[in-house]
Image 1: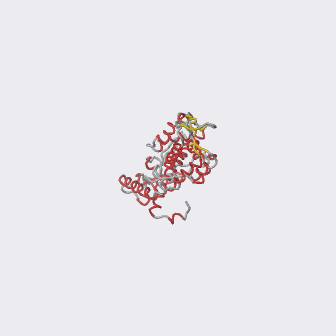
Image 2: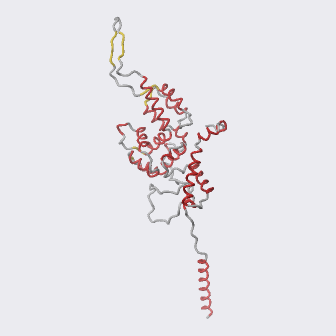
Image 3: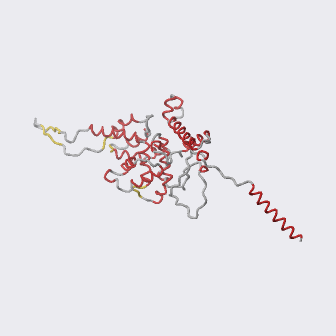
Length: 336
């Protein structure tokens, strides 16, 4: 969206498009919950930390699926969080089943539904091969497409099925006139229905679904790149093309290009590491793929009831006094 478009929107349309009310309601709810635990919580600092975490995309860890699913920004931020947590799997080249990917998702969102993972697998695999193992790079881009464009893909599927139904049924008789005879030969079609449709017809069918406020959709230019280069397309091929499209991935703006997906070192999961309690160094540090639950950026130290314990002020004085007495005794001994 061009920057000038926001000035042409009504207030209601702007609030709806950017889901402002969702974050305001969640922020107030979280503040009230933490105030019950600690009445001394600083409301201004709490709200500052909350909206900073939303801006940085660090606000979806350990949150319920309903909150993750509520806005496009939350969905995209959760995809990036999943990539940050588990890209070591891709570096090692491990292949996982959909049940294992669902278990990993459950570690950062306890009630994440298995149905979303199953739909993600259908983008990569055919229905009879859902028990096959999937690489991390294939899964993460398909997962991004399924989670971010869920409503759009469901509506596209309905349009696709409608186009298939518009063709003649294979059971309908086909009348073929014969040359030199008034009689017509009736042929019964025994072939199976084609599983692909005309690409241009499909584009015209899904074009009205684009640029809606109610849900996210890929850029029209990216859809043209997919559909204008092939005469016919299946819905499976359409989904694969969306998941692999570099322009669509850049439009969402959370994952790097596929060539750079596994490059670089691990990054911190939160931009506010000072909120996490300090721990003593361990002789055997945990594995880099082990999940360590960071403090929610929205929860300040005052909200969690964490306070610094200072040493007694008398302790340094006593140590200095003891040191001074020792020096005095030493000087007296030398003088004797």
